[in-house]
Length: 152
Picture 1 (cartoon, helix red, strand yellow):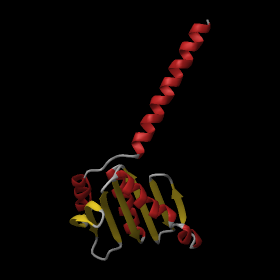
Picture 2 (cartoon, helix red, strand yellow):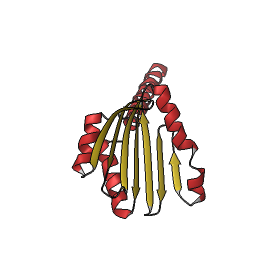
Picture 3 (cartoon, rainbow, N blue to C red):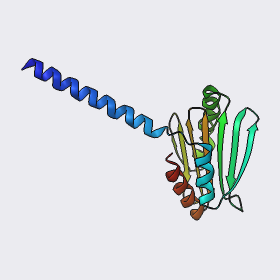
Picture 4 (tube, one colour):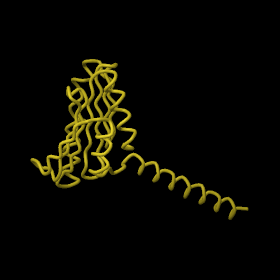
């Protein structure tokens, strides 16, 4: 009887560990530059591949005609550089909170919503950071659709 209980407990523990690892992986999906460009072009954003930039191995920006939807894909020189860059986003949210924005921040994800006026989303996976900023209800909806399409 005791052996059976121990086996069952071990199976439950292993199952819980597998599900927790799978859940962690889901939140940190790595998006390729090509997938990013394709998804942005599908929603009619103008994509500019800026190549290497200051402290970045790769930088791609995408935006609509009036800049009310702006998306960036940045690959840092290292994962530590990306962590530091992402920390900049999460450390500078106090002023947004003071303006009444709803701020949700995690280790690798930031989401800022201010009614239907403004939406900011940033996510880091490894050495890559993707940011999305949108103004106005229509563009916020487009931004959220893009985030869903990218799986971030």
